[in-house]
Amino acid sequence: MADITLEFEKPIVELEKKLEEWKNLSQSNNIDASDEITALSEKLEHTKKEIYSKMTPWQRVQLARHPQRPYTLDYINEVFTDFLEFHGDRRYRDDAAIVGGFAKLEGQKVMVVGTQKGRDTKENVYRNFGCPHPEGYRKALRLMQMAEKANVPVITFIDTPGAFPGVASEERHIGEAIAVNLREMFDLKVPVICVVIGEGGSGGALGIGVGNKVLIMENSYYSVITPEGCAAILWNDRAYSEKAAKALKLSATDLLGLGIVDGVVTEPLGGAHRDYANAANEIKKSVLSNLKDLQKMSTEQLVEQRYQRFRGIEFFNDGSEV
Amino acid sequence: MALFSNKNQYSTVKGFARQSKKKDIPRGLWEKCKKCSQTLYAKQLEENLNVCPKCGFHKALTAQQRVELLTDKNSFVEIDSDLESVDTLKFEGVASYTDKLAQNQKKTSMKDAVLSGTAKLDGQDYVIAVMDFRFLGASMGAVVGEKITRAIELATAKNLPVVIVTASGGARMYEGMISLMQMAKTSGALKRHANANLPYIVVMTHPTTAGVTASFASLGDLIVAEPGALIGFAGPRVIRDTTQAKLPEGFQTAEFLLEKGLVDKIIPRKNLRNELSLCLEYFQN
Ligand SMILES: [Zn+2]
Image 1 (cartoon, rainbow over the protein chains, first blue to last red):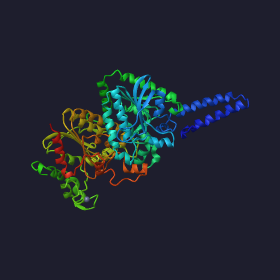
Image 2: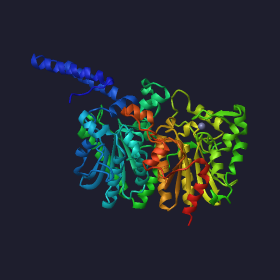
Image 3: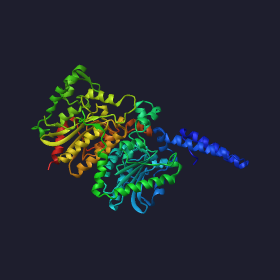
Image 4: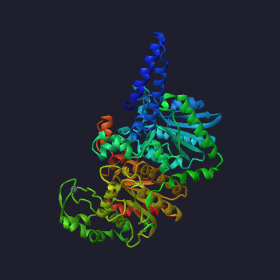
């Protein structure tokens, strides 16, 4: 697949092109262009840092949705071994928008569950653009409860625009499916780590998001509503999505500040899609270190910590400070 | 209902009239039914629990009216009445969240969209929480989530059933992810309540949607609904825009969800008090 350039990345691509031209020129014509090449390389590095370190929330949303961004199965391939995928919710069908199964993390047995997007149109039809139906959440819960039986930790990867808003979804009670997952994830007797790797689309993301630790990748977002949806409601105009993205405080650092997430996983400069192996390695390190902490806890402590983690998200005035 | 003829039925009706006198009279003595356009005598509508005598349309009740309907006289003791929302995100929208809150507080005489407390129904102790759609569409922010959670936790601590009367237009956008987290918080509290083997009854009223549907509203041991209530996760417009699908007849109504197996029972408002009381009675040991 050819590299896909986002609007704000254009200055970088221009410089990359120029640099490439000079390199070719110097090679084919035997000209010494080392000064120009060095200068351009420096300028390129500088521009990259400049652009990528000052990304707006809206630009990060675009990176989170980048069509070349690694998806759940990419990370499963990079981070784990011996992945054994299981299918179906035993009630209706297999929902390919959520994948899951046993896997090994540095030899440790775990259960991995995640929402899965498609890379092209055909795959996206199959994966429903990563938007699960109720059966996806029910499969996820079946697997997470199975993890309890096997006494292995649960790792979830979140990357979904949201639960699917459709007639079939409603008829089979998407709200109930998510609600039951929320309730039952609180009772899991094993460590649960959730990682937002791309889009954290509202209830559809939270449906596999009740963990002892919730991590988020640097250029991911996690939001109660898409910036487009928020713009449409508040400003009656999707053109205000950039403003909405900022107002919603949906980026990794904002969420860390609010205590909505417990850690931010660093991405390669310019986004995870630029270096899958590096991005995967960062996830692996972060999951392993969090897991190590959680494995020191007793079952009761794990369940209690998970409860208090969400219980403690309190932002209101209780009338005591008058 | 002969079974309950000895009980204090609808003692609350008078309460409504008294309560709403101030508000309703300036608006006029007459009101048009939203559904059938019948012109109704306001007092008559109130005495009929805000249900249109002609077409049966269930007009919303305020949280206060709902509590009066579902509790024994003077038995309701409000809890957590001091909780107030704050503009944590300093939300940069069209209007300021703080102003919105102030307007809605003035309009409803409530601090936020939930009224909760302990009460008795036909002498049976229970905890009740009611959402009031008038307050910012009963969208779920930190205060709504906290009050629901505290009500559930109180029920767990006191070994009591909990009844939640739901209505919600969705997330409290002004609170961003804090709003979403309330779905988890309330559901977690319900897990503990369920683990204590205590009953939880949901009364879904119009409209119960989005994050509330995808959390505590869908977790009742019993889920009952008022006739005609809109119940769903995604709104009909979003579904139509996303899928271009033609929505089935009666899609996302209480009746539709009864047929599809989510709702246990549809209870017209005039029977709600007695049937809720009977439900609680069946759970009594
Ligand atoms: Zn009518």
